[in-house]
Image (cartoon, rainbow over the protein chains, first blue to last red):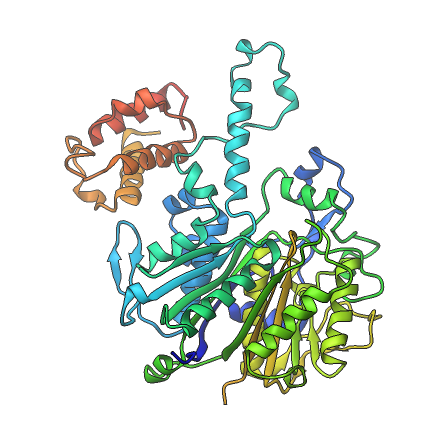
Length: 443
Length: 85
């Protein structure tokens, strides 16, 4: 069977920049970055080296279709996934008649539900629910101090109000995919990818392959993450590893991928992006608006370190080259690279060298994390969405705070018109997972 | 809080969990048999009541709540004792 063509027909996005794809996109173009001081309560547990993060905006979940009972049942990572998918499906112009109002489920008005799949990435799934329930469990004895005279209850935080009957389904990482499959009655393959910061990109790539190979006709794909636990535990985990941006004199200037004065990545509270991808011919028949074609994918593994990229960069170079080849072109065809661009000293050094080695200084290079902060596994989905939007609008956002580039590449220094025919979005993860998706403009 | 206020909050919580019309709720209605609550719905209802009234409801207490009236009486008693709000 010849490989089928795949197009992006719907986009939904939640990030520190906004709660819709439109808000995120306009903040990106306007250079409105997200940065704030971390919650004061986190400082009660540890004095962290970094003191800044990119919080999500206030979210009215009920207004977004997630009622108060679902808010008790579903981890924020799952709610972010559902909200982004809701927007993506609506954006794709696919009707969703209700199936079971009691379960808040729907179906997609699309030929065959068992040929519609879900491919989502997440780094740590329901870590927030895990923390809440474990804290309840660990602190339970302190609710009855008389029984435990050795404990000093006053030294500890208040106990979370309940151990939830949804403790397991809200903490399991596969919930981000399962929730979408349940909500829209999708009977095809339902997969969750856990390649940390590359998981969203891996998910989009596997959705592309499943459609191209004929296994499914439509896929919801992307990534979702929520790491803003009330104890600051996840923040501390990245902080002790010395990966986070220091606030410096001006926190607004702290997040600066590919800049000489970068000091680490800006930890984001969370985010999600979901793309509706379809077989191109079927999308054309139903008159769908297409943002971009997904034309190629590759992935590989560094096999080097659980936390550091191989400084040689050979594996990521081979992987990106393979993705470009999979799309049927050569490196000279690539006009735009949505870089992983975290802002850590080592990653940016290696990635910028690889970009120069493969593409020279011709393609425009954009670092979306310079504005969104690092949304962990959601970032691959967000950056795939931004890449599709950049192709559709023939416009790029700028690399925020890039005053002194570490290499002479064609970094996007200001937002604006940008002719793009072929684009690459790439991600590299803790563990050593590397992945890149190639997209093309729809002619 | 008045009994009517508690009844209304219980009814709206049951409506949110079981998606039943609150106006159709009668005190004698059985939560399992008449409102179609399965075991997962039942733990969800207890969780939602805990959230609504700000406290915890033990498994033993929850087991005794068979009808809508049982829930209203139980919550009213706990609110009077000031162990729920």
